[in-house]
Image (tube, rainbow, N blue to C red; front, top):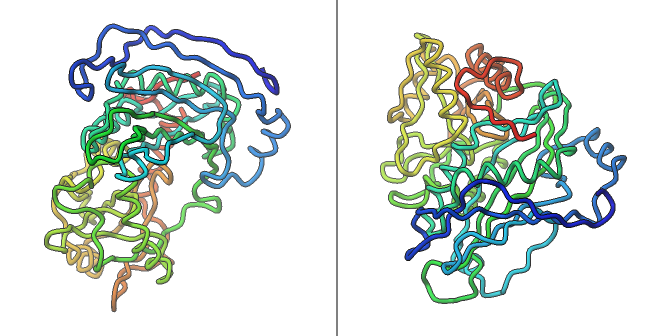
Length: 392
């Protein structure tokens, strides 16, 4: 109950991984996971929440009243699942995450449809990517079904935080950290999985507009054989310095090239990139092991194929971008990711050059794909691929 304190236990008929022998192997046993729900005694009132949702939400500025927490250790596997009050985590100063960076995360949204119901988009894909990231960072793999259920558990308590304004959503940040207090250099034998949630407003509050991108030639986002394909904090930390360089050049994002030859497109600091050709082709860099496999990226590839467009996933050089825009062969360029969905790119800038026109309007293909994808997410178009999952 709001403003008070109550506790209730909920048992869901799903399976959790009680890992045997090597606890990181994804070999579940038939043990149901019990969620203990403890309502916050300092939850915002209905009026306070309404004021927040009616204001300038931005991205990641406000957080809901509750969070999910599930613990794991080598002996017990996944256990102690809770929905509890949003608040600080208690970590031992020797926790492995603080010293060796064993951490992964995800980003996924909940959308309120016109009838008031709440849905999320392709959670099984996010859950599978979380597992791949966990495997690369030597963390335990949360079952995909449990990933989806953890979203549902949080929405069951904080459903009123899902906004209804156009293009708004509730952004989930699931994350996992190594919590064992141990300074030896090995994989931690204890970890915690958490979800926090933040109401998010329209990414382009004044309408979708092309952005300017800075080409980083001095830094690589990830190394060959590194963690580029995992969604972990270290990749983003490595992008912050070149991102500052981009801001200094008047650009909103940074583009990284491949770490070996330094000539092939990889991705932006947190988004995948697409080139649209005049002849109808849509081209995106192939997954190289150092590129994050975006859920929005794969969805756009499917929608493009549905339209009968020629889709190419291959190596793309920076010179192909430059010469293609200059000759008119490339008519549009855009980036994609969970937060912005699709962002048109108007200009590519680098040391001594600029390609494109930041004042040009967003391209027809870019905007058409963006509209189709968001219309599916918000329930305005039929979900012919079964991507939507109802949370409440």
